[in-house]
Image (cartoon, helix red, strand yellow):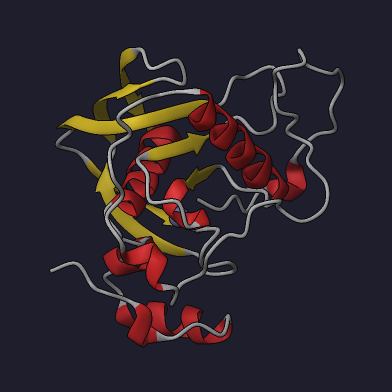
Length: 201
Ligand SMILES: [Zn+2]
């Protein structure tokens, strides 16, 4: 998910431990991020059967690319990897805050309250549109050490997790936009095409 408040990001005050990925990545993302229209974004991701070092290295590279692209979330299918792996950091301004690495995430409960919020996506740069989603969720997942975890989320985090989990099912946020007029205007403005949107039935 794209972060359009990146210009507000503060400068780092201290270096974190060596294992930590700096949130102040410079230059282009090291991994290519696929864009709306690329078929790879429309595939279903596969469960990760073994959480090993290769997964941890991949997660670290995804975090570096996400920070470099000024995003708050990135799903493995966005970099052409067909696996159920997400990285998320809604606290991009806080260097001490740990990012989330979600492996094989499953939403176990959706709250009944819906809200509408403007989303963006690193795969659809420059496009920002309102999407309606449940405002709270419960989920389970495995962490980067393969340990089973559970959590509750609300606010921006709940929104970001749902957006990133859609990528694991080949769904993009533009598929959920109800205002076709706004959608087409935004897509055309950024050089994307309506034919690449697959509206949710
Ligand atoms: Zn996205």
